[in-house]
Length: 436
Image (cartoon, rainbow, N blue to C red; front, side, top):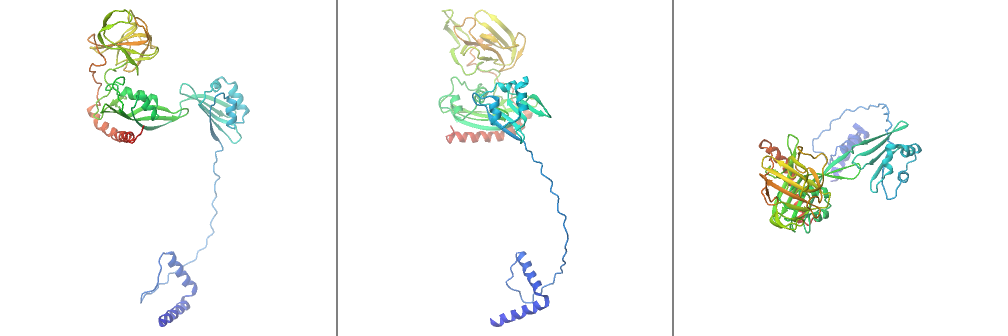
């Protein structure tokens, strides 16, 4: 072993004498940087000398451009009860006499003196607290926009910039549809849409059962002002063990509607009820004691109790044949739907604007408002459904379907609803996991 050490020492000395200590250190450093650790050399190994050259160059120091810094700030404050515009601007750190004078004296900015608690006032200021822009939502869904232009201010009404997202809610009915919806914070507007979509298959006045469940995927629009619920994109409702599904389909001509998985339209040609969420006080009967005439006679319609002023909707697409006063019916509207079908809406308090004989209406369009005109003892809608001018029970008659997705568009429809079906399945799992 001592002989081996002596031989290595002699070799190292000879190597150093020939190449110099500096080159040996450079070789060791190169080996370390290459990630290779050499613990020994195989017999007969030769080391090639790699030529090197030192180059020195002066580098020009790069010029770093100054960053453009936006020294303006958007701040937002919610209006509190009893707030004044001056108090809100003070909380927003506004220090701008010219802006406050303009807001106080310009008639176009008067909306800011009708502040509503809970609404948000947004202001963009510079570092000195000067107002550059101001935004406040108006009652009609628009946004009051005030911007500084030079030394003056411009005022305009603008559509709010919105971001649309999809939200999924699922719940189980334990007492009522609206209670189940409230339990998962589903907006009332979406709940009403849900009932409308499935109203052709489910009578929400009589068919709803404890244990029924639903999943709904809908649009939510967020921007200036409060979030606004939009249109339902897909929904599922399980009623008495039967599953119904609906998917929004926009056809090539721009019209839209809801269809099931096979492309069949969920919308019937007629609504079961022309008023939303009311109770029936008198059903279709061939013998009923009339509360006004105090005699037994046929009641060939359905009476829906509702507060005066409740909107009444057209049960189907049609043409107005009567819009006026008739004894007994009071203010009444009659619609003709094609050759065979017609509907009657009686005891109205008033007609919707522009409704007159000869005009065409679409299904769901508001045509009048509940009242108690004619032979009525309380506010309600008397509704008749006629086939060849013969009254039929609108709650039990088989209603015709609307047009399905055209055959040429079925493939596109199937591709569109595939991911939506997966979302509804996710909502179904939320309910089974105790989502309510």
